Image (tube, rainbow, N blue to C red; front, side, top):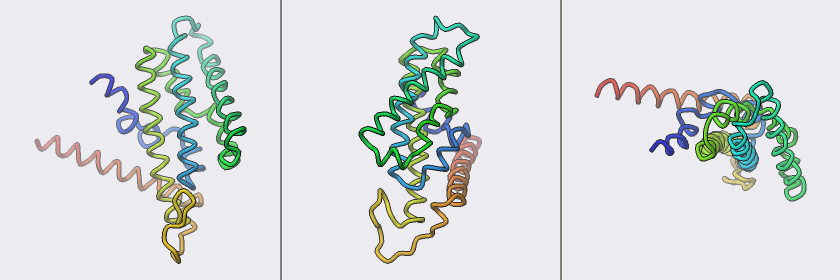
Length: 202
């Protein structure tokens, strides 16, 4: 049960975007399509998982005063692996995500989990934490991207949904990103408020 909570907290209780409010830059920029969201989730989760494992493995030998530069170096190394792999095998994805692939290095979700969690916990717990955070990040990205792509382009994964439907172009522009994110935050707060109310009335 403790392991399950370690994994599940990233989906709801400590969702990196909707609760912690980090990783917003890539979230708002690349969620114009579900495909972009899927690939960004894969890339970010790989870096998060790999860096968590390595940081946890060396936590006892890292001098405390240089831990941040070391963590950033580790993260940057895995980001380079992702970047070169996409460039070689998925050039279209690499072009679509653009600058946001190398910017994974400064994604607060990854450095935050390395510093706050992996550097203080076992490898198993760090793996569960990374997978849970990656899942929470990915579900939020995919939900945002799906809403924006359907309403803003009348498509999903590039396929037209309703013939003749005129899309609301604003949804795939910056205002649409902020509006959709605000809608998700409002929905989450409503659900939390109702759960809290039900607990008080029991």
